[in-house]
Image 1: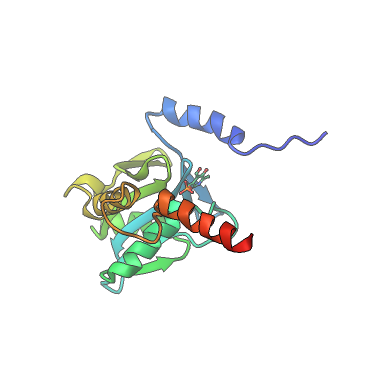
Image 2: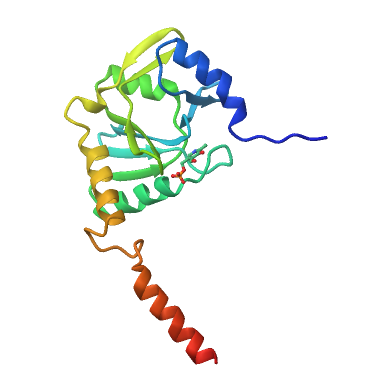
Length: 180
Ligand SMILES: Cc1ncc(COP(=O)(O)O)c(C=O)c1O
């Protein structure tokens, strides 16, 4: 018999992480510790890259991460705003730590349907706790994304992602009538 599971392998590491005072696991992959996901969220880093550009980076869909709907929504929104460089590529713990040391990292956050966006304040890596300045200025990017996505979900701003169910029902009725 083959038993398949999705979240089960994460339960014991999650309990270990909690014992160490962490709320979530930052899942790393490979010898170079590529950042993949935070808990069951996709992971974003907003930083000033080495070329001096303000950039939002998230791992690309290389098969190791879940292609979350919140992830793609954030990418589409930020690309639409046109204020930041948006990059889908893997990034490593070394890049993140170097960016922190050089005060280039502005925000790190997880993204998923449950929380929408979740700021990261600290990362425990190889026994050392690193402070992430996400909340230092109130997480302007993460907060703006949260507000925009909530506004779309609650119909406060118009978006093709939000469909009026009554309009949809009428449309379907029209199609059915035509087909008769
Ligand atoms: C492993 C994993 N990554 C990311 C996500 C976020 O995906 P979404 O934005 O579609 O909720 C989820 C959601 O359940 C997940 O289980």
